[in-house]
Image (cartoon, rainbow, N blue to C red):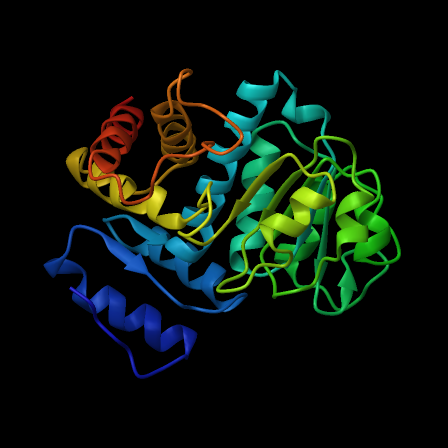
Length: 280
């Protein structure tokens, strides 16, 4: 049931959701900007007795992580040894970085609209600073220099930001998930021409659609099936494994790293894994 609120005030949103809680089994937050979204989700999870889930953060992050796990499965490479560059530092990008840490990746640098995140910047909010504290990366002066020698590029920013030369400066067999919509940071054909091997976009007209639709129907169904009060880290990791594992070894290829987000059987597979994690 879509409920549109005619406010962007944090306290008013929290108060409204708390007042409608008795009618629902799950609250799904959508299109709330960072950093407001972090405080709203944190407060509601602490104060409600049903799960509250901000899909713009976690759904996208889980889809990305599932795709990367399948790259590792296909290539035999260790994710924890890879260098990651993320373009964007809003809700989905910060959630992605935090989930990548859980997969063992620590060499992560990020760029926002003002440049690379670094500890000498005084304009960073607490959520960006928290990612910096967990990262072992040394960012370059700008996005182009940071991408040199990187293994993974994740774009959650704007169209056309990455040139062929920038993609070509990455390590051999690079992974490029350029997810800006409708036009990605670099088009798949340009990334391929620059030497990238594993390529995903947020679009449905290219292979490897990295879309939050892979995650959220199953997350909601699994949490409600288990009557969970929260969507925990363990439930998110279970969803990632279920999405990745839905692609069989026989199906797995450079052009089939993730299931079709419109596969009607995928949500039940994800839901079963999420419910089992919640019950455990």
